[in-house]
Amino acid sequence: MKRVLDVLTVLLLAGCGSDPTPVTGRFGEVTSAVVVVNPVINQGSTTTVAVGPDRSGVRFKAADLDPVQTDSTGLALVEELPTGTVELDFDPGTYSFQVFQEKELYDVVVAYRDGTVQQIIPPVRYPIGGTVVELEPGGDIAQAAASDNTIIMLAPGTYPGNFELRNAGVLIFGAWSPEEGPLSIIEGNVTVLGGSNRMRGVKINGRLSSNANNLSVSFSDIASATISGNGVSLLRNRFTAGQATVPSSNAVLVDNTGIP
Image (cartoon, rainbow, N blue to C red; front, side):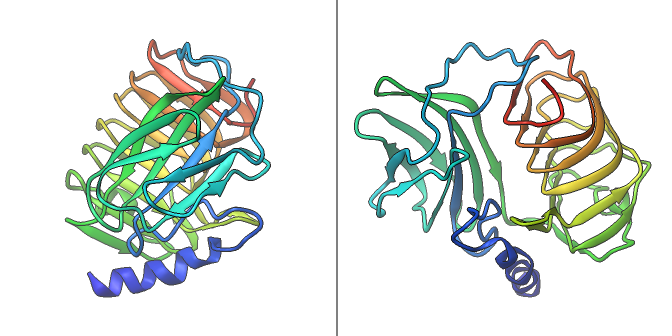
């Protein structure tokens, strides 16, 4: 596990800087949360939460840590979080979520309006522990994901696509740069069949298809997508071919570009 965490430090520190805000955090090294405030609600979302007008400079405090504020895109990174219930205090207005284990990463998306904080997407948990597979460019992602709840770390580079993810609870975590975006590139299509899978910081040059429930995709570049499962969340992805079909009865799409 130590070797994996050493590699994660090398990959993810590329996202650590003051401007723009690093959205990878230091997954596997420091307990952290990426907090997105008042995102753009894309068409197709089933949320009824109304966002506030302010994105830049929204100030809040997490637990007993020093206050932070959002950047111009409504994003703030909070590190060194405690485990247990963590309260975000916007003064006025609070929101709480659970941190289950040290060194994990969470995406927290909220609306802040008139002193009230509301959840838009249930916090997306990126767990650490269990089976962790480190892949180098050219590696077989489908083979690495042959067991439930596997964490797959992709180094920068290119990986073959046209595969199916049949197991559940798989996390595919790509290398990411705040200047360049995803550095882990999948050449071809990806079909998600297992439930509760998560993808973060990857680039898919083909079509992402899924009829599975509770799929989460964030901070990724995707040529096109057809997603029909329930409980879907799409956060800050770029649809580079401008095509995304999400006919789910329970999907939340926020801050995505290349779609309405």
